[in-house]
Image 1 (tube, protein in one colour):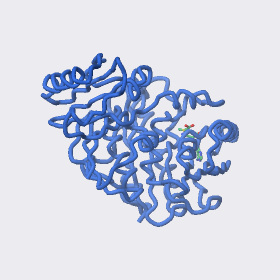
Image 2 (image 1 turned 60 degrees about the horizontal axis):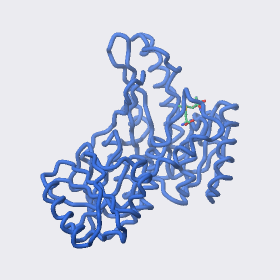
Image 3 (image 1 turned 45 degrees about the vertical axis):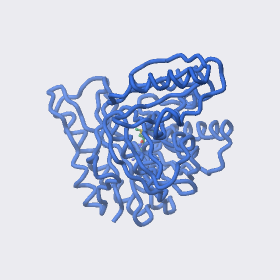
Image 4 (image 1 turned 30 degrees about the horizontal axis):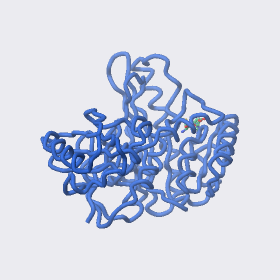
Length: 369
Ligand SMILES: C[S@@+](CC[C@H](N)C(=O)[O-])C[C@H]1O[C@@H](n2cnc3c(N)ncnc32)[C@H](O)[C@@H]1O
């Protein structure tokens, strides 16, 4: 058995659902033994490839492997060692520091503690080249874990320089990646984004080795999507194929062969420059409910048996402070989908509402029945 601490990004519930979906989709047995808003303690039957895993997850910041004691740390062969300690609800920090100092002394090395409560930020981790020059320990409850892989933000920064970003409707790279994983689609399978916009979700799928199909009703947007994916292919030389179709999502099954899963941030209503009034939000929600109903009917026809849909649904904030929701559970049931929970400890939908946004979002995973 091998145990790991996964350090979670913001929206920890989404991160946990993503981890559960990622390993279930690949038939890798795992057990989430404990979690809180910062970390999850997960056990596996065998060791996992931390570097490969962190590249595929959007909601995990670090993966650290449990060790029995500080004696299990292989000190780098350097005069000056840099190290960091993330203390997450543990009472062991002082004890650990004393033991470490003893080891540094025995080893004849000078060591510098780069301190911060949650450990080094990913950018500091790479700036200090910690994997070469030192190590990071994560203390969680009574456990000691050694950081094995860290999310590298430079990849996202490079991809955010793609030719076309339609900012008013763009999905973030992080969320796009999470949605791909929530759809349970894996390497060499086929994923559809029926409202693909400029192809952020498709892009993340392709980089994971997934065949990607996109639809968008807007011709210019689809042209931009094509330019983006061509740019991506030249830059990253991935092997998976993509197909873009300039059609309405409500006609998906007429144009698209069967797919393994769907991941999408659909049309969420007109772009909001200010909070809408209650009656305005209700009107928009009614129109969207119809669009989602007609789309889900088509998704059902386009998916393979047991295929899953990872989808974002808007939840409107209003001037009157009364939230407006769409009865999406009802729409799903009517179209022969069940709400799918890869991990029972997190309830669905998961709310996604970064500070300052005028529109909250609810994230669902559905399974075709
Ligand atoms: C929220 S955006 C998608 C953003 C996308 N994930 C990205 O990162 O660019 C929704 C997209 O749905 C498209 N759209 C709206 N109604 C549609 C429909 N009925 N069928 C297909 N696409 C539609 C819009 O043109 C828009 O590009």
